[in-house]
Image (cartoon, rainbow, N blue to C red):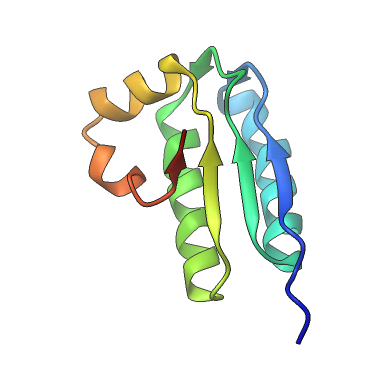
Amino acid sequence: MPKSQVQSVALPPIVDLDALDDIREKLIDALHAGPVDVTADAVERVSTNALLMLLSAAETARQASFSFSISAPSNVMVGAIEKLGLKSAFEPVLKG
C-alpha cells in the first residue's frame, strides 16, 4: 500500500472565530486524504476554540492511524498553549 502524501495546512496570522470555519474545512479535507502537517509560523493571534479544534483534528488523525503535526508554531501560539495549560496535550504534535 503506497504511503499517503502529507497534506499541508497553513494557519493564517489571525486564527479566531471568523477563521475557524475555513480552517476546519481545510483540516477535514486534509484528514480525509492522509497525514497532515499544520504550519503555524505566521500565527499572531489564536483563539482557545482554534487550539481545541487542532487537538480534535490531531485525535481524528490518530484514530485513523495518520500522523498529525504542527510545524514551527509561532511564539504567540506556544504562549497561548502554555497559558491555557494545554502544553502536555500539544507536546505529541508540536514540531520545531
